[in-house]
Image (cartoon, rainbow, N blue to C red; front, side, top):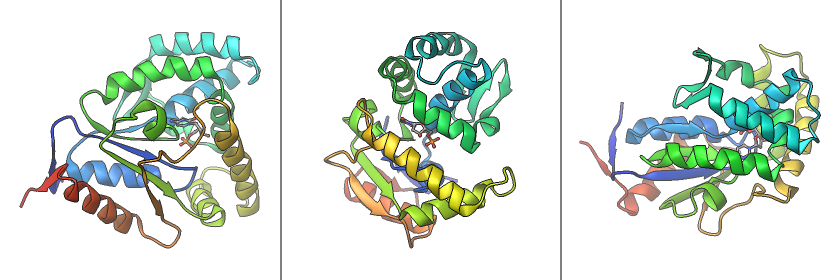
Amino acid sequence: MAEWAAIEGLSIAIDGPSGSGKGTVATLLADEIGVPVLDTGLLYRLTGSAALQRGLSLDDEQAVAALVDVLLDEIVWTIDGIFLNGKNVTAELRSETVGAAASCVAAMLSVREKLLALQHKLAKEGCVMDGRDIGTVVLPDAPAKFFLTASLRERARRRWAQLKNQEDNSLESVLAELKVRDQRDAERQHAPLKQAADAICIDSTTMRADDVVDRMLGVLQRRKLITALR
Ligand code: DC
């Protein structure tokens, strides 16, 4: 239940690499301040997953961009996830295979441009939005931006713990895959993973998610973006 009231239309950007905890923290923070949370990685995951299913080459920007047009007509993206033909497909998009494909299609400019409009539309009413380029590209005027990070090993450990029951992955293979994905996301030409100049960086390596959220709440309160409800 919300413990804080947010100013009308408040949007908060949370960026960071895979496994930095941004999804968990974004959900907790949004709950505390009573605003919707939007996970933008799902859009890239959906595109990557659909491209794999259709046997498209993950180098074929034209084909993948055309696929995005089709997907945008078919999906509904809400705070509960992505719905395809009325079915919530979010859980199916969480695998490492889909994550790797998402990272490939996310490097394509035309794909990013097509997905940007939808992100702007949903963010209009205010939200906590997490991704890689929220503070730099999607919501450059957000009054609060956070860049969440953690050591590579700790991020791999978190991903591995999440995936343990779903896929047969060793910690070392998750770490190696994460390294490749970090590099691809940070070195791509368009909207790379980068801390916005006015973002606050939080290293969560040794922090619990609740402590990260408390630190964020402190920033929002000092900036008069939220007030305590009791
Ligand atoms: O956060 P995630 O693991 O669900 O993201 C999957 C991929 O999507 C990630 O490798 C990079 C890409 N992505 C992006 O380029 N921009 C975003 N705003 C969100 C995700």
